[in-house]
Length: 251
Ligand code: NDP
Ligand code: 8X3
Image 1 (tube, helix red, strand yellow):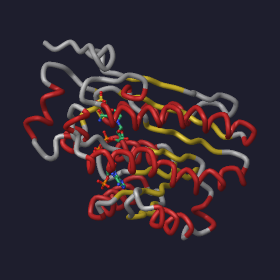
Image 2 (image 1 turned 30 degrees about the vertical axis):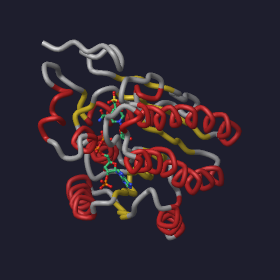
Image 3 (image 1 turned 90 degrees about the vertical axis):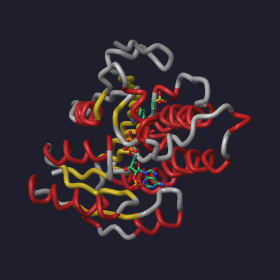
Image 4 (image 1 turned 135 degrees about the vertical axis):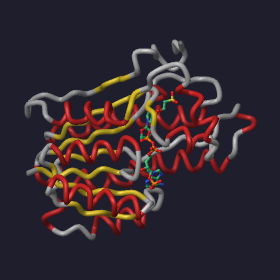
């Protein structure tokens, strides 16, 4: 039985990953801010898959909260085999001169600093055990920059750089680092980006079949089930109707 810690499981990719790893014999540490969804997912997994689940309810932007939650883990839960750095968001879609500084801070604090806070606490536990696997959920926005995407793209470029840096730093510790860069995935992502505007949130998916959260969970399952000596470094995944951040084919 293995242990995985997944950040941001209250919806989308994180939730689908929790379910898929539970189906595949993982006990889980699940984190997010919405406690009701966290509790419901814990119950679902315990009842349906008979796995042990620990929920940690904190805002990943708070270093104090991250430290307190991870420092509070008992010995059993400190044996983390897989860390999925998934929690993240895009807020707003504006030219740089019109950007909302609060939106920028939310993206930078969550996508970059939050990922760093968690990794800083979990990586030493993996190093102590001489094994582990860190999976960073980046984005196609981590290697490509589109108009209005400025700060979100910058935050995911940081995840791309950090993934490469972590892989180098973790090399002698036998710890795998994988970056997964999805294109368009239908989750709550667009609803958050467009601040609750349902109509705008649906617009990216008109006339095409997007990826679903389960498609990314499936990729995560693939990378964690490779033989010990194999590390999948990078994966870029788009729906068949999306070539990259710029070209999309709509019917
Ligand atoms: P969702 O909005 O459905 O899920 C995002 C998750 O992140 C939620 O569980 C949310 O939980 C959590 N989260 C956000 N902010 C915080 C915070 N401050 N502290 C703790 N948890 C937080 O979107 P996705 O599932 O699509 O997004 C998951 C990851 O995938 C993100 O990193 C995103 O950038 C990336 N991605 C998404 C793509 C897409 O098209 N959907 C494409 C490429 C990458 P809660 O609100 O309860 O805290
Ligand atoms: C989400 C994909 O293209 O909206 O990271 O930036 S995109």
